[in-house]
Length: 231
Image (cartoon, rainbow, N blue to C red; front, side, top):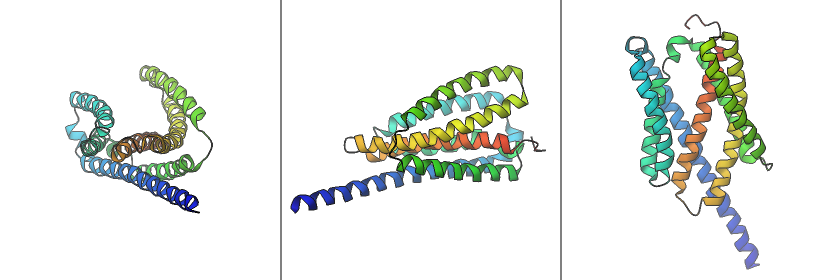
C-alpha cells in the first residue's frame, strides 16, 4: 500500500510542478505581450516625427542580439534573463510601433483578437496532445526557411499580392510553431526540470512563445489591414 501511496504522491507532485512551470511560462509570455503593446501604443504617436532609418537599423540589430542573449543568460541567471526579457519586449514594442500609424485601430484589434484565439487553441493542443508534433515542427521550419527566401525576393519585386500570400503562409507556419513549441517546452521541463533552473527554463519558453505570438500578430495584421486608409 505504501508503494501505491508514494507513487500517487509522486504523480501529484509532478502534475503540480508542471502546472507551476506552465503558469510561469505563459504568464511571463503574456506580460511580454502586454509590455510590447503598451510601449507600441505610447510610441505610435511619435513614430512619424522621430522615424530614422539609421536608428531603426541599429534597433533591429540590438533586437536580434537581445533575443539570443535573453535565452542564453536566462539559463545561468533567471533574474537577469527576466530583466532582458522585459527590455526585449519593450524594444519590440518600440520597433513595431509603426502599426499605429499604418493601420486602423479596427484592423489592430481584429488582428490581436484573432491572434489570441489562434495562439490559445494551438498552445492547448500542444500541451495536451499525446501525439508527437516533431514532424509538424520540421515541416514548419522548412516552410519558414523557404518563406524567408521568397520574402527576400519580394523585397525587390514589391508585389502586394505576393505580400498577401506570404502573410497567409506565415500565419499557417507560426500557428504550427505555436503547437510544436508548446509541446517542446513541456517536454523540456519533463526532461531537464530537475537539472536546471525552473525559472530560467520558463523564461526561455516564454521568449519562444512570445516570438510565435508576435509573428502571428504582425502577419494577421497585414491581412486584416488590407485597404486601410492609414497605410
